[in-house]
Image (cartoon, rainbow, N blue to C red; front, side, top):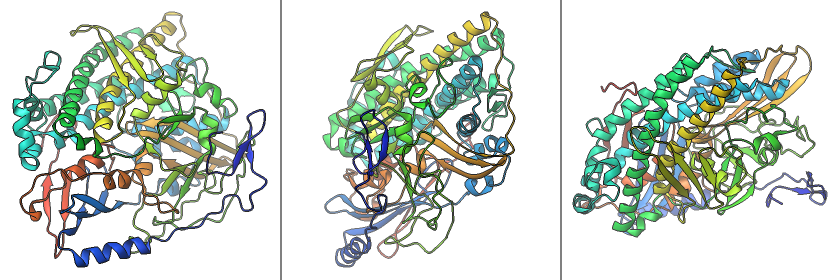
Length: 625
């Protein structure tokens, strides 16, 4: 039994069905936020050391995220937190009425950083809807494209987006005593990464000038070069289509990728060593850093990297082909894996809009999935996107993000969830370089210019901002090895003369079809849910990792992952006057999720407030501006 809150139970054969003893089974009561808001207002009015601190925007690239907090600078804690997605983009509305074949090219524009994952997820949804199975080499190439995309995305996060929060420039300003300690602390893995002290690593992270920052720019360029060898262009590839890909590959093509891939594998060895040293330094300096960005170990991931022989795109067999992926699908609740079954992961998904700028919908077209399992009225196949912009209210609506939940529980989308689920499930069929142990994932990195190396990511005792970043470093090595494994797989196919990369198909012009693409982005979970009638899209819903993580409170008043992580974060920053407060611990908590939303940080305070502005503009092609 994997559901605790949904009215779903299982028969003796393990098939899910709706409980018959619950009247109005999906009904719920909305908890008012008015009392909480009034309490905060009273505290603000009564205490000079309790202040509104607003961060707008939060991120250094790609999107619009603002964050409201109320902080107690005397007790050094956060009293209130509200995550605000400030932009409505409306791809679900744009896609209605379109030819399904447009979906991959339009939905990829949902993100200018990771458009390739949207294109592929869209193709997976259409393959399921129409029963299209790509040939093995087409699946292998899609797997390689995804892995290479992550070899761009992970360094971008670790050194350009989150990394500057741990740089000399910020640590020396916000925690001068920590900086003095860092200068005197030897780096345990200096022989691997070449930095003698932790202070040297922090200097390397300085934005625009640090060696690690500049190196990461060049490595993202290298990954992009590898991608376009078979993807033709980025960030919106034209070669990814339902049924496979439209690119031409040869052994020469694969060799061009291999040269770049070996360099990226070497780079991942260095990156893991750097983040191991950084995280352990902060923990040793102050154990309270284990609470920065902390939240329960509730993570969700639909898995990715399909097995070329097992994947047939069908919903009926999704549980089987899902568990043969290089990243095992799974839901982790309170640190325990409760399911790896893609059907149940889909059935448990709901999306709520009580505190979002949308109207509720009245339709309920799908009461069951294609296998007969019950679906909630709030499942994405049933959802209708009805934007309703209103004034901002902390007790009512305050975000363009919705509140996706699994089994009505707050879960986070996280790239580390891929390693976590794969490590504890032990189902991984492809073990050329990877070995799950139940509590860890062992990785065997082959020699390049650097010697061969064994890495082991272990399920962390604490789940916080530092472990998200550390895990992201291991995800770089993980992704590189999956790319290499698929490279060998593809080379074998080419040598056997299996060169077909896509399956031809026709769009049925009558009938109703549904499909879901289970995939992922650099930041975690990504699903596209499509409903097609008489050859046209009638409903299309996208759930991104940042939709999940940036979600506002749900109907029961539970904060979204960003909000919850910030509420649990102690204020460890050093400041002599409250007006010098920067909020670095709060920013580290939010940015550890890699929110995909451009390049400025503001702190606004009015009356009691003021504004601090830090601006960093970068071009990820390798040039600075």
